[in-house]
Structures are given as C-alpha cells and as structure tokens.
Figure (cartoon, rainbow, N blue to C red):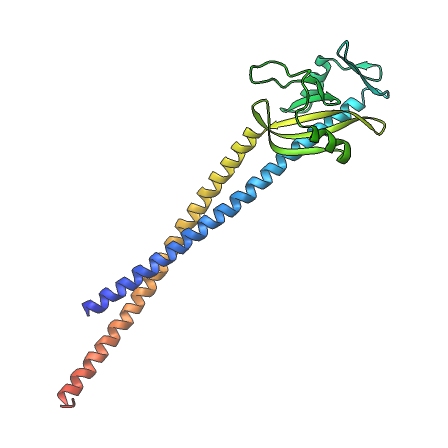
Length: 242
C-alpha cells in the first residue's frame, strides 16, 4: 500500500512539474513575442511623431508668405517671400510643436537649428552627413527612420522638403529623442512581464489545485481497488485455490 501511495505521489509531482514547466515556457514565449510587438509599435509611433512634427513646421513656414523661399549665404538670412525667418521666429514656431528638435536645411546645409554637438556648440552651418537622405527626400517627398545618431544622440527622425513650386530647395528636420522611446519600451515590457508573471502564478495555483484534487480522487479509487483485490485474494486462498 505504501509503495502504491509513493508511486501515486511521484506521478502527481511529475504532472505538476510538467504543467508548471509548460506554463513557464509559454509565458517566456508570449513575453518575447509581445515585447517585439511593443517595440515595433512604439518605434513606429515615434517615427510618426517625427513625421508629424516636420510636416507641421513646413506647413507653418509655408503660411508665413505667398512668396518663395530664398537664402543669402553672405548674410545668413532666410526668407519666405518678404518674411525674414530669424532664429527667434524659428524658435517661436518650435514652441507650438512640443518637445522635439528641429532643423531647417538650405540644400544640405543647416541654417537654423536648436541641435548642438557633443560640446554644446551650435551645428548651424554644418552639412548633412548622409547624401542619400537628401536624394530620398527629393525622390520620395519624405525620409523617416529610427535610431539615427546625430552628434552623439539617437533620434527617431524625419526630413520633409521645403519647395519653391516643384523644386526642393531645403528640408525641415524633426528629431525625437530615441532614449525617451526606449524608456517607454522598457516600461511597457516590464509591465508585460509583471502581468505574465501574475497570470502564471494564478494559472499554476489552479493547475496544482486541480491536479491534487484529481490525484486524491484517483488515490481513493486505487485504494478501493487494492482493498477489493486483497479481499478476493484472501477469499481464493481460504477456498484453497492456487
């Protein structure tokens, strides 16, 4: 009888371990899948934010005057028609667009910007490092990407054209600090892990309770069967039947 009970206990332990291992594996797989999904969604959203920012700045500049854009490299003055777009005016426009970084390019040269280099110096007057970006803006009408390093900082970026008629004469850049996006991703994944862990604990508790309940019932049936078998064996022995 003791041997039978020990065997039943081993089976129950094996069933519990197998189910718990399955729950852990499924939880890990779901966490990885959901983490990848969350990462792609947040990355896409931040790229869309950068796109919206660039389009918004370009639209506001277009509304300043009906004339064309023109820039004097000698004086460093940038106009939309008769309206001089000074650094102060540019920053005033930026205030309406939230916490982002913006740059205006004339061709591929930065003429207005609130970005700084690693030493905190203004990057106005510097040239766009990747010529393919300007080419894509001219061909596709927009360029956006995630995790782009600009002077030591990682951004979700968008470059949007400034046009005189159909001619692209410059670009508006918007950058959203990717570190903010990465923090959002980490927070979302940590929250997901906590939710999966809690669900795993609840499911595990239910599984253990169910297995123990079934095991007790199974053990009772085994005990009854053993008793019946022992009674029959005694009966046969008493009758002298080998």
